[in-house]
Length: 199
Length: 175
Figure 1 (cartoon, one colour):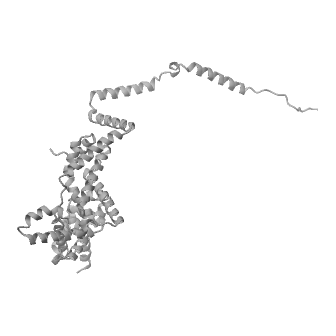
Figure 2: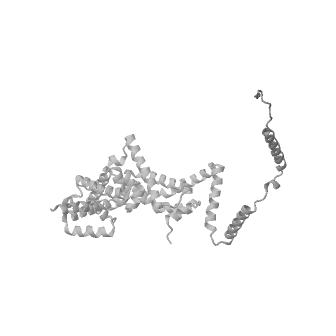
């Protein structure tokens, strides 16, 4: 039997650490992935994901299962990511991944194994992934968040509206514009063009 | 292209992203699908959306490191211990009351005998107190003093009420 997130959170409120552990296990990869696509820095994304879970744990005693747990978790993560982006812009700092263009440590093992077979194809794939990430990074903050949530987290528009604190209509147009801009950026980067260039 | 066709295309194009994400109602979905069969411009736009989505999904997802879970759990445990140590008495009392409330919510149901008995007892007590309210004066040991003081006050009031008749300073003389 699969226990729902809300039930686990209620158990966590009573002080059950194993329920909290199960919640972390469920969402750790998705959350790190989401924050990573938002701020484009793996190590900082892990830190922020940890901070998100700790905030959830801290406010577990006040938790009421009114809204879905997932939306609540992603709202906290979104707020932390937004703060990070603003702080970075204020301090005018750049992360190593922004400058080097590649996060070697994340893909290194996979790259090492497959290099023997098709190095040129792998390099091409990696290059394309970097270009896509770069294009995603160039989108406005809200568009990037909405597009990441709908594409990588496969959330409904209602959930996204709850997380970004907008109406569903606003989310519809936000995602529409995000896809249009993304297409333009990908064409500019040399990928995603061709016959279907109009969007 | 006729004008009504352009308007239709404009309307459909704003809905295409939602159509692609399966976020439009069924009736609208059928209408859009019907339009797409006829309009090559709009159907190529859907293809473009599909292509962009495919490219976005081709990016390999990152995973949390192996130490992630253990770090979070150890930090949470530390936080829990420090919270317990630094929690003021008032907060602890609040937690106890909250726990009691949740226990009551979980264990006391409408058809529970203890609950029913308690409820009936409370209702009858309230009715009894309302109809046959006990005389507080009899129960209160200070009522004697209170009554004396009230008498004094009454006396005072009476003394104030007495109006002394004075003789008029000037009297009219009738010839």
